[in-house]
Length: 100
Image (cartoon, rainbow, N blue to C red; front, side, top):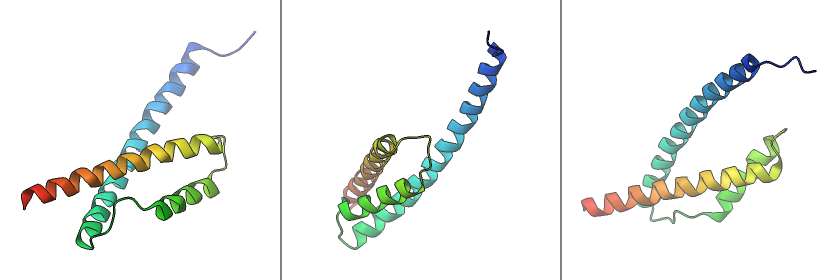
């Protein structure tokens, strides 16, 4: 018979909620930097999409992943993050163009 209680589950969920807030803070911090990068790209007339840079990001996170999250999951998560960051840059660039 298990010694696990409902309180154990509740404690784990509190920890998850706290981690989710930290993840959100980090994602917003990343987004602010991505917005700066988008402005620099716009000033330099560079493309938003940079496959070589994205590959560097994947290699960086995969080389620092020591589990238990599998490699494939890390790739999917960061593909989604990068896709959303590209969208942020596109929206910001379009807003800047409309101001002109």
